[in-house]
Image (cartoon, rainbow, N blue to C red; front, top):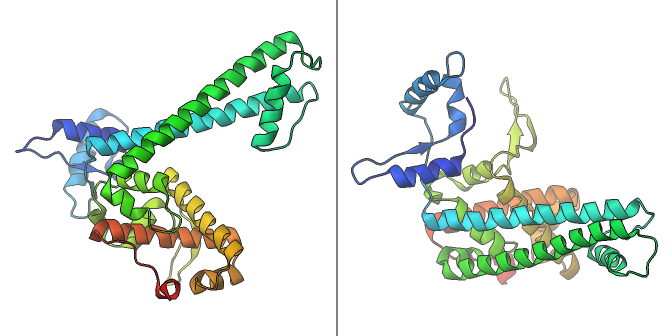
Length: 294
Protein backbone atom coordinates (compact mmCIF):
# COMPACT_ATOMS: atom_id res chain seq x y z
CA UNK A 1 0.00 0.00 0.00
CA UNK A 2 1.27 3.45 -0.82
CA UNK A 3 2.27 5.57 2.17
CA UNK A 4 -0.21 8.31 3.03
CA UNK A 5 0.69 11.87 3.95
CA UNK A 6 -0.30 12.17 7.62
CA UNK A 7 -0.69 15.96 7.46
CA UNK A 8 -2.88 15.70 4.36
CA UNK A 9 -5.06 13.13 6.11
CA UNK A 10 -5.29 15.41 9.15
CA UNK A 11 -6.39 18.28 6.91
CA UNK A 12 -9.06 16.08 5.33
CA UNK A 13 -10.28 14.98 8.76
CA UNK A 14 -10.69 18.62 9.77
CA UNK A 15 -12.89 19.29 6.76
CA UNK A 16 -14.91 16.06 6.86
CA UNK A 17 -15.60 15.83 10.61
CA UNK A 18 -19.06 16.89 11.82
CA UNK A 19 -20.62 17.09 15.30
CA UNK A 20 -22.36 13.73 14.71
CA UNK A 21 -19.58 11.98 12.81
CA UNK A 22 -15.98 12.39 13.93
CA UNK A 23 -13.45 11.19 11.37
CA UNK A 24 -10.54 9.37 13.01
CA UNK A 25 -7.07 9.40 11.48
CA UNK A 26 -4.81 6.40 12.02
CA UNK A 27 -1.24 5.49 11.12
CA UNK A 28 -0.96 4.80 7.39
CA UNK A 29 2.00 2.49 8.03
CA UNK A 30 -0.26 0.02 9.88
CA UNK A 31 -2.44 -0.84 6.88
CA UNK A 32 -0.14 -2.72 4.44
CA UNK A 33 0.04 -5.83 6.65
CA UNK A 34 -3.71 -6.29 6.20
CA UNK A 35 -3.60 -6.19 2.37
CA UNK A 36 -4.07 -9.80 1.26
CA UNK A 37 -2.71 -9.65 -2.27
CA UNK A 38 -2.09 -7.06 -5.00
CA UNK A 39 -2.51 -3.31 -4.73
CA UNK A 40 -5.84 -1.84 -5.75
CA UNK A 41 -8.56 0.33 -4.25
CA UNK A 42 -10.79 -2.58 -3.27
CA UNK A 43 -7.95 -4.38 -1.46
CA UNK A 44 -6.95 -1.14 0.27
CA UNK A 45 -10.52 -0.48 1.45
CA UNK A 46 -10.82 -4.02 2.79
CA UNK A 47 -7.48 -3.68 4.61
CA UNK A 48 -8.54 -0.38 6.18
CA UNK A 49 -11.84 -1.86 7.41
CA UNK A 50 -9.97 -4.82 8.87
CA UNK A 51 -7.28 -2.65 10.50
CA UNK A 52 -9.55 -0.10 12.21
CA UNK A 53 -11.51 -2.91 13.90
CA UNK A 54 -8.40 -4.09 15.75
CA UNK A 55 -8.22 -3.26 19.45
CA UNK A 56 -4.57 -2.21 19.25
CA UNK A 57 -4.95 0.12 16.26
CA UNK A 58 -3.30 3.50 16.81
CA UNK A 59 -5.28 6.64 16.02
CA UNK A 60 -3.87 10.10 15.44
CA UNK A 61 -5.73 13.24 16.62
CA UNK A 62 -6.23 15.87 13.95
CA UNK A 63 -4.19 19.07 14.03
CA UNK A 64 -5.86 22.45 14.27
CA UNK A 65 -5.62 24.95 11.41
CA UNK A 66 -3.21 27.00 13.56
CA UNK A 67 -0.91 23.99 14.00
CA UNK A 68 -1.00 23.25 10.27
CA UNK A 69 -0.16 26.89 9.54
CA UNK A 70 2.84 26.81 11.90
CA UNK A 71 4.06 23.57 10.32
CA UNK A 72 3.82 25.24 6.92
CA UNK A 73 6.02 28.04 8.25
CA UNK A 74 8.65 25.54 9.36
CA UNK A 75 8.56 23.48 6.17
CA UNK A 76 8.73 26.49 3.88
CA UNK A 77 11.67 27.88 5.87
CA UNK A 78 13.39 24.49 5.75
CA UNK A 79 12.88 24.38 1.98
CA UNK A 80 14.46 27.82 1.61
CA UNK A 81 17.44 26.71 3.72
CA UNK A 82 17.97 23.66 1.47
CA UNK A 83 17.73 25.87 -1.61
CA UNK A 84 20.22 28.31 -0.06
CA UNK A 85 22.69 25.48 0.52
CA UNK A 86 22.23 24.29 -3.06
CA UNK A 87 22.87 27.78 -4.48
CA UNK A 88 25.99 28.26 -2.34
CA UNK A 89 27.37 24.88 -3.43
CA UNK A 90 26.62 25.75 -7.04
CA UNK A 91 28.52 29.06 -6.81
CA UNK A 92 31.48 27.33 -5.20
CA UNK A 93 31.53 24.55 -7.81
CA UNK A 94 31.31 26.96 -10.77
CA UNK A 95 34.11 29.18 -9.47
CA UNK A 96 36.26 26.14 -8.67
CA UNK A 97 36.23 25.39 -12.42
CA UNK A 98 38.21 28.61 -12.86
CA UNK A 99 40.58 27.82 -10.00
CA UNK A 100 38.88 30.16 -7.51
CA UNK A 101 38.40 28.48 -4.15
CA UNK A 102 37.41 30.04 -0.82
CA UNK A 103 37.38 28.69 2.77
CA UNK A 104 34.35 26.80 4.01
CA UNK A 105 31.80 28.92 5.87
CA UNK A 106 29.97 32.20 5.50
CA UNK A 107 33.16 34.23 5.22
CA UNK A 108 34.34 32.16 2.27
CA UNK A 109 30.98 32.53 0.51
CA UNK A 110 31.11 36.31 0.97
CA UNK A 111 34.60 36.39 -0.56
CA UNK A 112 33.33 34.55 -3.64
CA UNK A 113 30.44 36.98 -4.07
CA UNK A 114 32.88 39.90 -3.91
CA UNK A 115 34.94 38.30 -6.67
CA UNK A 116 31.82 37.88 -8.80
CA UNK A 117 30.81 41.51 -8.24
CA UNK A 118 34.27 42.85 -9.18
CA UNK A 119 34.36 43.50 -12.96
CA UNK A 120 38.11 44.14 -12.86
CA UNK A 121 38.78 40.50 -11.86
CA UNK A 122 39.65 38.89 -15.21
CA UNK A 123 39.73 35.35 -13.85
CA UNK A 124 35.99 35.08 -14.43
CA UNK A 125 34.69 35.40 -18.04
CA UNK A 126 31.78 37.78 -18.63
CA UNK A 127 29.27 35.04 -19.48
CA UNK A 128 30.18 33.11 -16.35
CA UNK A 129 30.04 36.33 -14.32
CA UNK A 130 26.47 36.96 -15.49
CA UNK A 131 25.42 33.45 -14.45
CA UNK A 132 27.12 33.75 -11.08
CA UNK A 133 25.59 37.19 -10.50
CA UNK A 134 22.13 35.68 -11.06
CA UNK A 135 22.93 32.97 -8.53
CA UNK A 136 24.17 35.62 -6.10
CA UNK A 137 20.91 37.57 -6.41
CA UNK A 138 18.97 34.36 -5.82
CA UNK A 139 21.05 33.70 -2.72
CA UNK A 140 20.39 37.17 -1.30
CA UNK A 141 16.66 36.76 -1.96
CA UNK A 142 16.60 33.41 -0.14
CA UNK A 143 18.42 34.91 2.86
CA UNK A 144 15.86 37.71 3.10
CA UNK A 145 12.99 35.20 2.96
CA UNK A 146 14.57 33.03 5.65
CA UNK A 147 14.94 36.05 7.94
CA UNK A 148 11.29 36.96 7.35
CA UNK A 149 10.14 33.44 8.18
CA UNK A 150 12.28 33.49 11.33
CA UNK A 151 10.41 36.64 12.36
CA UNK A 152 7.02 35.02 11.65
CA UNK A 153 7.93 31.93 13.69
CA UNK A 154 9.02 34.15 16.58
CA UNK A 155 5.68 35.99 16.47
CA UNK A 156 3.83 32.64 16.58
CA UNK A 157 6.03 31.53 19.48
CA UNK A 158 5.23 34.60 21.53
CA UNK A 159 1.50 34.13 20.96
CA UNK A 160 1.43 30.50 22.20
CA UNK A 161 1.58 29.78 25.93
CA UNK A 162 2.80 26.17 25.58
CA UNK A 163 5.60 27.21 23.24
CA UNK A 164 6.75 29.87 25.70
CA UNK A 165 6.82 27.32 28.54
CA UNK A 166 8.89 24.87 26.48
CA UNK A 167 11.41 27.61 25.77
CA UNK A 168 12.64 27.37 29.39
CA UNK A 169 14.06 23.88 28.79
CA UNK A 170 17.85 24.08 28.18
CA UNK A 171 18.52 23.48 24.48
CA UNK A 172 14.94 24.24 23.39
CA UNK A 173 14.66 27.51 21.51
CA UNK A 174 11.70 29.14 19.75
CA UNK A 175 12.29 27.05 16.62
CA UNK A 176 12.03 23.69 18.42
CA UNK A 177 9.29 24.86 20.79
CA UNK A 178 6.99 25.98 17.97
CA UNK A 179 7.73 22.85 15.93
CA UNK A 180 6.78 20.67 18.91
CA UNK A 181 3.51 22.48 19.57
CA UNK A 182 2.60 22.37 15.87
CA UNK A 183 3.54 18.71 15.36
CA UNK A 184 1.90 17.18 18.44
CA UNK A 185 -1.87 17.58 18.29
CA UNK A 186 -2.45 15.90 21.67
CA UNK A 187 0.57 14.95 23.84
CA UNK A 188 -1.66 12.69 25.97
CA UNK A 189 -1.83 10.32 23.00
CA UNK A 190 1.56 9.02 24.17
CA UNK A 191 1.49 6.89 27.31
CA UNK A 192 4.89 8.05 28.52
CA UNK A 193 7.88 10.21 27.68
CA UNK A 194 9.66 7.14 26.31
CA UNK A 195 6.85 6.55 23.81
CA UNK A 196 7.12 10.17 22.73
CA UNK A 197 10.89 9.88 22.35
CA UNK A 198 10.44 6.66 20.37
CA UNK A 199 7.98 8.45 18.08
CA UNK A 200 10.70 10.99 17.27
CA UNK A 201 13.24 8.19 16.73
CA UNK A 202 15.64 8.90 19.61
CA UNK A 203 15.57 5.46 21.27
CA UNK A 204 17.75 2.42 20.41
CA UNK A 205 16.49 0.06 17.75
CA UNK A 206 15.79 -3.41 19.15
CA UNK A 207 16.79 -6.68 17.58
CA UNK A 208 16.05 -8.92 20.56
CA UNK A 209 15.35 -12.63 20.47
CA UNK A 210 15.48 -15.65 22.81
CA UNK A 211 15.17 -13.50 25.91
CA UNK A 212 18.32 -11.55 25.05
CA UNK A 213 18.08 -7.80 24.61
CA UNK A 214 20.07 -6.50 21.67
CA UNK A 215 19.99 -2.73 21.29
CA UNK A 216 21.59 -0.99 18.35
CA UNK A 217 21.79 2.61 17.21
CA UNK A 218 18.78 4.93 17.38
CA UNK A 219 15.85 3.91 15.19
CA UNK A 220 15.69 7.24 13.26
CA UNK A 221 11.98 6.67 12.77
CA UNK A 222 9.37 9.38 12.95
CA UNK A 223 9.83 13.08 12.37
CA UNK A 224 13.35 13.75 11.07
CA UNK A 225 12.94 17.51 11.42
CA UNK A 226 12.06 17.34 15.13
CA UNK A 227 14.87 14.86 15.73
CA UNK A 228 17.45 17.14 14.10
CA UNK A 229 16.26 20.11 16.20
CA UNK A 230 16.50 18.09 19.42
CA UNK A 231 20.04 16.92 18.57
CA UNK A 232 21.09 20.47 17.66
CA UNK A 233 19.73 21.72 20.97
CA UNK A 234 21.54 18.96 22.89
CA UNK A 235 24.82 19.81 21.14
CA UNK A 236 24.34 23.47 22.13
CA UNK A 237 23.89 22.45 25.78
CA UNK A 238 27.04 20.30 25.64
CA UNK A 239 29.03 23.06 23.98
CA UNK A 240 27.94 25.55 26.66
CA UNK A 241 28.74 23.04 29.41
CA UNK A 242 32.26 22.46 28.06
CA UNK A 243 32.94 26.20 28.00
CA UNK A 244 31.43 27.11 31.38
CA UNK A 245 32.00 23.81 33.17
CA UNK A 246 29.83 20.77 33.83
CA UNK A 247 30.10 20.54 37.62
CA UNK A 248 26.45 21.63 38.02
CA UNK A 249 25.29 18.85 35.65
CA UNK A 250 26.57 15.59 37.21
CA UNK A 251 24.57 13.37 34.82
CA UNK A 252 26.04 15.09 31.77
CA UNK A 253 29.52 15.14 33.30
CA UNK A 254 29.48 11.38 33.86
CA UNK A 255 28.09 10.76 30.38
CA UNK A 256 30.75 12.85 28.62
CA UNK A 257 33.45 11.07 30.62
CA UNK A 258 32.58 7.66 29.16
CA UNK A 259 30.97 8.44 25.78
CA UNK A 260 31.87 10.54 22.70
CA UNK A 261 30.21 13.93 22.32
CA UNK A 262 27.82 12.87 19.55
CA UNK A 263 26.64 9.83 21.52
CA UNK A 264 26.12 12.00 24.59
CA UNK A 265 24.15 14.47 22.46
CA UNK A 266 21.71 11.73 21.39
CA UNK A 267 21.20 10.66 25.02
CA UNK A 268 20.66 14.27 26.07
CA UNK A 269 18.24 14.83 23.17
CA UNK A 270 16.27 11.82 24.40
CA UNK A 271 16.15 13.36 27.86
CA UNK A 272 15.03 16.74 26.48
CA UNK A 273 12.25 15.08 24.49
CA UNK A 274 10.90 13.38 27.62
CA UNK A 275 11.00 16.69 29.50
CA UNK A 276 9.09 18.40 26.69
CA UNK A 277 6.43 15.67 26.66
CA UNK A 278 5.92 15.91 30.43
CA UNK A 279 5.48 19.67 30.25
CA UNK A 280 3.04 19.48 27.34
CA UNK A 281 1.00 16.57 28.71
CA UNK A 282 0.75 17.87 32.29
CA UNK A 283 0.77 21.61 31.61
CA UNK A 284 3.70 22.14 33.95
CA UNK A 285 6.56 24.61 33.87
CA UNK A 286 10.22 23.66 33.68
CA UNK A 287 11.78 22.89 37.05
CA UNK A 288 15.56 22.98 37.36
CA UNK A 289 17.24 19.87 38.78
CA UNK A 290 18.36 20.07 42.38
CA UNK A 291 22.04 20.11 41.37
CA UNK A 292 21.44 23.23 39.26
CA UNK A 293 19.20 25.01 41.73
CA UNK A 294 21.71 24.62 44.57
